[in-house]
Image (cartoon, rainbow, N blue to C red; front, side, top):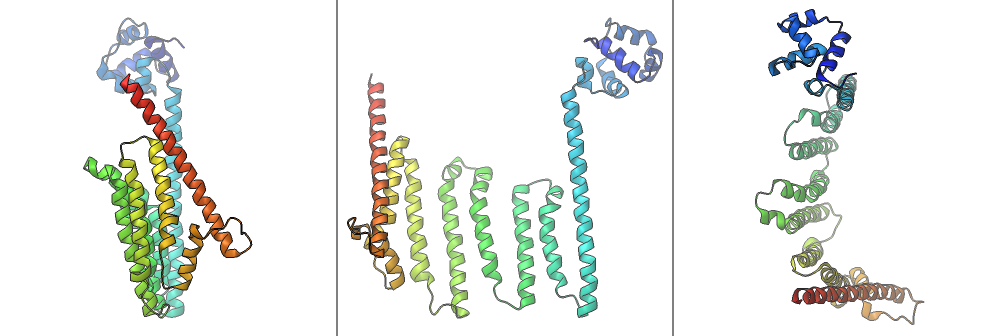
Length: 353
Protein backbone atom coordinates (compact mmCIF):
# COMPACT_ATOMS: atom_id res chain seq x y z
CA UNK A 1 0.00 0.00 0.00
CA UNK A 2 1.34 3.43 -0.97
CA UNK A 3 1.83 5.68 2.02
CA UNK A 4 0.06 8.61 0.35
CA UNK A 5 -3.47 9.90 0.49
CA UNK A 6 -4.05 9.17 -3.18
CA UNK A 7 -2.68 5.64 -3.01
CA UNK A 8 -4.72 4.88 0.13
CA UNK A 9 -7.88 6.31 -1.47
CA UNK A 10 -7.36 4.25 -4.63
CA UNK A 11 -6.81 1.00 -2.69
CA UNK A 12 -9.89 1.48 -0.47
CA UNK A 13 -12.02 2.47 -3.47
CA UNK A 14 -11.05 -0.75 -5.26
CA UNK A 15 -11.72 -2.80 -2.11
CA UNK A 16 -15.25 -1.37 -2.10
CA UNK A 17 -15.62 -2.29 -5.84
CA UNK A 18 -16.19 1.31 -6.86
CA UNK A 19 -14.98 3.03 -10.01
CA UNK A 20 -13.80 6.63 -10.00
CA UNK A 21 -16.98 7.57 -11.81
CA UNK A 22 -19.23 5.82 -9.26
CA UNK A 23 -17.42 7.37 -6.31
CA UNK A 24 -17.58 10.80 -7.94
CA UNK A 25 -21.32 10.40 -8.48
CA UNK A 26 -21.89 9.48 -4.85
CA UNK A 27 -19.92 12.51 -3.67
CA UNK A 28 -21.46 14.85 -6.26
CA UNK A 29 -18.08 15.73 -7.78
CA UNK A 30 -16.57 15.13 -11.20
CA UNK A 31 -14.65 11.99 -12.16
CA UNK A 32 -11.58 14.12 -12.90
CA UNK A 33 -11.70 15.45 -9.32
CA UNK A 34 -11.46 11.91 -7.93
CA UNK A 35 -8.64 11.20 -10.37
CA UNK A 36 -6.73 14.23 -9.10
CA UNK A 37 -7.20 13.04 -5.50
CA UNK A 38 -5.76 9.63 -6.30
CA UNK A 39 -2.80 11.22 -8.10
CA UNK A 40 -2.20 13.51 -5.09
CA UNK A 41 -2.62 16.53 -7.33
CA UNK A 42 -5.46 17.79 -5.15
CA UNK A 43 -7.22 16.84 -1.94
CA UNK A 44 -10.93 16.69 -1.09
CA UNK A 45 -12.66 19.46 0.78
CA UNK A 46 -12.77 18.86 4.52
CA UNK A 47 -16.57 18.79 4.43
CA UNK A 48 -16.43 15.68 2.22
CA UNK A 49 -14.24 13.67 4.60
CA UNK A 50 -17.05 12.27 6.82
CA UNK A 51 -19.04 10.96 3.84
CA UNK A 52 -15.92 9.76 1.99
CA UNK A 53 -14.63 7.83 5.02
CA UNK A 54 -18.06 6.26 5.51
CA UNK A 55 -18.16 5.07 1.88
CA UNK A 56 -14.68 3.58 2.09
CA UNK A 57 -15.29 1.90 5.45
CA UNK A 58 -12.51 3.74 7.28
CA UNK A 59 -12.35 6.40 9.96
CA UNK A 60 -11.60 10.04 9.20
CA UNK A 61 -8.32 9.68 11.08
CA UNK A 62 -7.31 6.72 8.91
CA UNK A 63 -8.28 8.60 5.76
CA UNK A 64 -6.27 11.69 6.69
CA UNK A 65 -3.20 9.71 7.76
CA UNK A 66 -3.55 7.35 4.78
CA UNK A 67 -3.09 4.28 6.96
CA UNK A 68 -5.24 1.70 8.71
CA UNK A 69 -5.19 2.20 12.49
CA UNK A 70 -5.15 -1.48 13.50
CA UNK A 71 -4.75 -0.70 17.19
CA UNK A 72 -7.82 1.54 17.23
CA UNK A 73 -9.82 -1.02 15.26
CA UNK A 74 -8.81 -3.78 17.67
CA UNK A 75 -9.89 -1.61 20.60
CA UNK A 76 -13.25 -1.04 18.95
CA UNK A 77 -13.66 -4.77 18.36
CA UNK A 78 -12.79 -5.56 21.98
CA UNK A 79 -15.13 -2.81 23.21
CA UNK A 80 -17.95 -4.23 21.09
CA UNK A 81 -17.29 -7.73 22.44
CA UNK A 82 -17.34 -6.39 26.00
CA UNK A 83 -20.61 -4.53 25.42
CA UNK A 84 -22.14 -7.68 23.95
CA UNK A 85 -20.94 -9.77 26.89
CA UNK A 86 -22.13 -7.18 29.40
CA UNK A 87 -25.57 -6.98 27.78
CA UNK A 88 -25.81 -10.78 27.68
CA UNK A 89 -25.05 -11.05 31.38
CA UNK A 90 -27.55 -8.30 32.13
CA UNK A 91 -30.29 -10.14 30.22
CA UNK A 92 -29.26 -13.42 31.87
CA UNK A 93 -29.76 -11.93 35.34
CA UNK A 94 -33.12 -10.41 34.39
CA UNK A 95 -34.35 -13.80 33.15
CA UNK A 96 -32.93 -15.56 36.22
CA UNK A 97 -34.74 -13.20 38.59
CA UNK A 98 -38.04 -13.74 36.78
CA UNK A 99 -37.57 -17.54 36.73
CA UNK A 100 -36.84 -17.47 40.47
CA UNK A 101 -39.68 -15.14 41.47
CA UNK A 102 -42.56 -16.66 39.51
CA UNK A 103 -42.29 -20.23 40.94
CA UNK A 104 -41.83 -18.85 44.47
CA UNK A 105 -44.87 -16.62 44.05
CA UNK A 106 -47.02 -19.51 42.83
CA UNK A 107 -45.75 -22.00 45.47
CA UNK A 108 -46.22 -19.57 48.35
CA UNK A 109 -49.80 -18.85 47.30
CA UNK A 110 -50.58 -22.52 46.63
CA UNK A 111 -49.13 -23.86 49.89
CA UNK A 112 -49.74 -21.05 52.40
CA UNK A 113 -52.73 -19.40 50.68
CA UNK A 114 -50.95 -16.08 51.17
CA UNK A 115 -47.67 -14.36 50.42
CA UNK A 116 -45.33 -14.82 53.39
CA UNK A 117 -41.81 -16.15 52.75
CA UNK A 118 -42.09 -14.97 49.13
CA UNK A 119 -41.19 -11.46 50.31
CA UNK A 120 -37.92 -12.76 51.74
CA UNK A 121 -37.05 -14.25 48.35
CA UNK A 122 -38.12 -11.03 46.62
CA UNK A 123 -35.95 -8.84 48.88
CA UNK A 124 -32.98 -11.20 48.55
CA UNK A 125 -33.21 -11.00 44.75
CA UNK A 126 -33.63 -7.23 44.98
CA UNK A 127 -30.39 -7.06 46.98
CA UNK A 128 -28.71 -9.18 44.32
CA UNK A 129 -30.13 -6.88 41.63
CA UNK A 130 -28.42 -3.86 43.22
CA UNK A 131 -25.07 -5.61 42.70
CA UNK A 132 -25.63 -7.13 39.25
CA UNK A 133 -27.94 -4.95 37.12
CA UNK A 134 -28.33 -1.63 38.92
CA UNK A 135 -24.72 -0.43 38.37
CA UNK A 136 -25.35 -0.37 34.61
CA UNK A 137 -28.58 1.61 35.04
CA UNK A 138 -27.02 4.26 37.27
CA UNK A 139 -25.13 6.72 35.09
CA UNK A 140 -24.19 9.46 37.56
CA UNK A 141 -23.05 9.60 41.19
CA UNK A 142 -22.40 5.84 41.33
CA UNK A 143 -20.02 6.25 44.26
CA UNK A 144 -22.89 7.64 46.34
CA UNK A 145 -25.96 5.90 44.93
CA UNK A 146 -24.61 2.35 44.70
CA UNK A 147 -23.59 1.91 48.38
CA UNK A 148 -26.86 3.57 49.46
CA UNK A 149 -28.94 1.29 47.23
CA UNK A 150 -27.07 -1.79 48.47
CA UNK A 151 -27.61 -0.75 52.07
CA UNK A 152 -31.29 0.11 51.52
CA UNK A 153 -31.92 -3.28 49.87
CA UNK A 154 -30.12 -5.06 52.71
CA UNK A 155 -32.16 -3.15 55.31
CA UNK A 156 -35.35 -4.12 53.50
CA UNK A 157 -34.31 -7.78 53.48
CA UNK A 158 -33.38 -7.75 57.18
CA UNK A 159 -36.60 -5.90 58.01
CA UNK A 160 -38.75 -8.46 56.21
CA UNK A 161 -36.84 -11.31 57.89
CA UNK A 162 -37.31 -9.66 61.30
CA UNK A 163 -41.05 -9.34 60.71
CA UNK A 164 -41.30 -12.91 59.41
CA UNK A 165 -39.43 -14.36 62.41
CA UNK A 166 -41.16 -11.96 64.83
CA UNK A 167 -37.75 -10.91 66.13
CA UNK A 168 -36.53 -7.63 67.57
CA UNK A 169 -32.99 -7.93 66.26
CA UNK A 170 -33.35 -5.62 63.22
CA UNK A 171 -31.23 -2.74 64.55
CA UNK A 172 -28.58 -5.10 65.88
CA UNK A 173 -28.18 -6.48 62.35
CA UNK A 174 -28.36 -3.17 60.49
CA UNK A 175 -26.11 -0.96 62.59
CA UNK A 176 -22.89 -3.00 62.13
CA UNK A 177 -23.37 -2.81 58.35
CA UNK A 178 -24.00 0.93 58.61
CA UNK A 179 -20.88 1.34 60.74
CA UNK A 180 -18.82 -0.58 58.14
CA UNK A 181 -20.14 1.65 55.33
CA UNK A 182 -19.39 4.79 57.32
CA UNK A 183 -15.87 3.61 58.14
CA UNK A 184 -15.13 2.72 54.50
CA UNK A 185 -16.78 5.56 52.59
CA UNK A 186 -16.43 8.59 54.89
CA UNK A 187 -12.74 9.23 54.01
CA UNK A 188 -13.48 8.52 50.34
CA UNK A 189 -16.38 10.99 50.22
CA UNK A 190 -14.40 13.67 52.05
CA UNK A 191 -11.46 13.23 49.69
CA UNK A 192 -13.64 13.30 46.56
CA UNK A 193 -16.38 15.76 47.45
CA UNK A 194 -14.76 17.94 50.10
CA UNK A 195 -14.97 21.58 49.00
CA UNK A 196 -12.49 23.10 51.43
CA UNK A 197 -8.78 22.19 51.31
CA UNK A 198 -8.77 22.23 55.12
CA UNK A 199 -11.47 19.56 55.23
CA UNK A 200 -9.39 17.36 52.95
CA UNK A 201 -6.26 18.09 54.99
CA UNK A 202 -7.93 16.89 58.19
CA UNK A 203 -9.76 14.04 56.47
CA UNK A 204 -8.36 11.39 58.83
CA UNK A 205 -9.38 13.34 61.96
CA UNK A 206 -12.90 13.97 60.67
CA UNK A 207 -13.30 10.35 59.55
CA UNK A 208 -12.07 9.08 62.91
CA UNK A 209 -14.56 11.32 64.71
CA UNK A 210 -17.44 10.07 62.57
CA UNK A 211 -16.33 6.46 63.16
CA UNK A 212 -16.18 7.10 66.90
CA UNK A 213 -19.74 8.44 66.97
CA UNK A 214 -21.08 5.60 64.78
CA UNK A 215 -19.30 2.94 66.85
CA UNK A 216 -20.65 4.31 70.12
CA UNK A 217 -24.17 4.44 68.68
CA UNK A 218 -23.81 0.79 67.71
CA UNK A 219 -22.49 -0.21 71.15
CA UNK A 220 -25.23 1.79 72.89
CA UNK A 221 -27.96 -0.03 70.95
CA UNK A 222 -26.32 -3.41 71.61
CA UNK A 223 -26.11 -2.54 75.32
CA UNK A 224 -29.85 -1.79 75.46
CA UNK A 225 -30.65 -4.94 73.46
CA UNK A 226 -28.60 -7.24 75.69
CA UNK A 227 -30.12 -5.85 78.90
CA UNK A 228 -33.72 -5.84 77.63
CA UNK A 229 -33.43 -9.42 76.39
CA UNK A 230 -31.67 -10.68 79.49
CA UNK A 231 -28.27 -11.34 77.94
CA UNK A 232 -26.64 -8.90 80.39
CA UNK A 233 -27.52 -8.14 83.99
CA UNK A 234 -26.64 -4.45 83.87
CA UNK A 235 -25.71 -1.81 81.34
CA UNK A 236 -22.06 -2.16 80.37
CA UNK A 237 -21.82 0.67 77.81
CA UNK A 238 -21.23 3.65 80.16
CA UNK A 239 -18.84 1.77 82.44
CA UNK A 240 -16.89 -0.31 79.92
CA UNK A 241 -17.50 0.40 76.23
CA UNK A 242 -17.53 4.22 76.35
CA UNK A 243 -14.30 4.56 78.40
CA UNK A 244 -12.46 2.08 76.15
CA UNK A 245 -13.59 3.66 72.86
CA UNK A 246 -12.84 7.14 74.22
CA UNK A 247 -9.37 6.07 75.32
CA UNK A 248 -8.61 4.53 71.91
CA UNK A 249 -10.07 7.60 70.16
CA UNK A 250 -7.78 9.96 72.09
CA UNK A 251 -4.76 7.72 71.43
CA UNK A 252 -5.40 7.56 67.70
CA UNK A 253 -5.91 11.32 67.47
CA UNK A 254 -2.60 11.97 69.19
CA UNK A 255 -0.85 9.51 66.90
CA UNK A 256 -2.44 11.11 63.83
CA UNK A 257 -1.48 14.52 65.18
CA UNK A 258 2.21 13.61 64.92
CA UNK A 259 2.01 13.88 61.13
CA UNK A 260 1.14 17.59 61.47
CA UNK A 261 4.44 18.29 63.21
CA UNK A 262 6.99 20.02 60.98
CA UNK A 263 9.74 17.48 61.56
CA UNK A 264 11.36 14.83 59.38
CA UNK A 265 9.85 11.37 58.93
CA UNK A 266 12.35 9.64 61.19
CA UNK A 267 11.36 11.91 64.08
CA UNK A 268 7.68 11.29 63.38
CA UNK A 269 8.18 7.52 63.36
CA UNK A 270 10.08 7.66 66.65
CA UNK A 271 7.37 9.76 68.34
CA UNK A 272 4.62 7.45 67.07
CA UNK A 273 6.43 4.39 68.46
CA UNK A 274 6.81 6.14 71.82
CA UNK A 275 3.10 6.99 71.89
CA UNK A 276 2.16 3.40 71.01
CA UNK A 277 4.29 2.10 73.85
CA UNK A 278 2.88 4.69 76.24
CA UNK A 279 -0.78 4.02 75.50
CA UNK A 280 -0.54 0.22 75.21
CA UNK A 281 1.78 -0.55 78.12
CA UNK A 282 2.47 2.41 80.41
CA UNK A 283 -1.06 3.74 81.00
CA UNK A 284 -2.79 0.32 81.41
CA UNK A 285 -0.22 -0.62 84.05
CA UNK A 286 -1.72 1.98 86.41
CA UNK A 287 -5.42 1.37 85.67
CA UNK A 288 -7.49 -0.46 88.29
CA UNK A 289 -11.00 -1.80 87.62
CA UNK A 290 -13.58 -3.70 89.68
CA UNK A 291 -14.14 -6.47 87.15
CA UNK A 292 -11.72 -9.39 87.97
CA UNK A 293 -11.58 -10.60 84.36
CA UNK A 294 -10.69 -7.15 83.01
CA UNK A 295 -8.20 -6.58 85.82
CA UNK A 296 -6.43 -9.84 84.89
CA UNK A 297 -6.11 -8.66 81.29
CA UNK A 298 -4.61 -5.38 82.50
CA UNK A 299 -2.25 -7.19 84.86
CA UNK A 300 -0.99 -9.33 81.97
CA UNK A 301 -0.03 -6.11 80.15
CA UNK A 302 1.79 -4.72 83.20
CA UNK A 303 5.42 -4.58 82.14
CA UNK A 304 6.46 -3.53 85.67
CA UNK A 305 5.53 -7.01 86.92
CA UNK A 306 7.85 -8.71 84.45
CA UNK A 307 10.62 -10.96 85.78
CA UNK A 308 12.91 -12.11 82.99
CA UNK A 309 14.52 -14.66 85.35
CA UNK A 310 11.16 -16.41 85.82
CA UNK A 311 9.48 -18.07 82.82
CA UNK A 312 7.64 -21.00 84.40
CA UNK A 313 4.52 -19.31 85.76
CA UNK A 314 1.83 -18.42 83.22
CA UNK A 315 1.37 -14.90 84.63
CA UNK A 316 5.11 -14.20 84.51
CA UNK A 317 5.25 -15.49 80.94
CA UNK A 318 2.62 -12.97 79.79
CA UNK A 319 4.35 -10.07 81.55
CA UNK A 320 7.77 -11.08 80.22
CA UNK A 321 6.58 -11.32 76.62
CA UNK A 322 4.93 -7.90 76.80
CA UNK A 323 8.02 -6.46 78.45
CA UNK A 324 10.21 -7.73 75.59
CA UNK A 325 7.80 -6.25 73.03
CA UNK A 326 7.84 -2.95 74.95
CA UNK A 327 11.65 -2.85 75.03
CA UNK A 328 11.89 -3.74 71.33
CA UNK A 329 9.53 -0.93 70.34
CA UNK A 330 11.36 1.45 72.68
CA UNK A 331 14.72 0.61 71.10
CA UNK A 332 13.26 1.17 67.63
CA UNK A 333 11.80 4.50 68.77
CA UNK A 334 15.15 5.66 70.13
CA UNK A 335 16.89 4.53 66.93
CA UNK A 336 14.47 6.54 64.76
CA UNK A 337 14.80 9.57 67.01
CA UNK A 338 18.59 9.43 66.75
CA UNK A 339 18.30 9.02 62.98
CA UNK A 340 15.93 11.97 62.85
CA UNK A 341 18.36 14.07 64.89
CA UNK A 342 21.22 13.21 62.53
CA UNK A 343 19.12 14.17 59.51
CA UNK A 344 18.11 17.43 61.21
CA UNK A 345 21.72 18.34 62.03
CA UNK A 346 22.89 17.56 58.48
CA UNK A 347 20.19 19.74 56.99
CA UNK A 348 20.98 22.52 59.44
CA UNK A 349 24.67 22.44 58.59
CA UNK A 350 23.92 22.30 54.84
CA UNK A 351 21.59 25.33 55.13
CA UNK A 352 24.18 27.10 57.21
CA UNK A 353 26.83 26.55 54.55
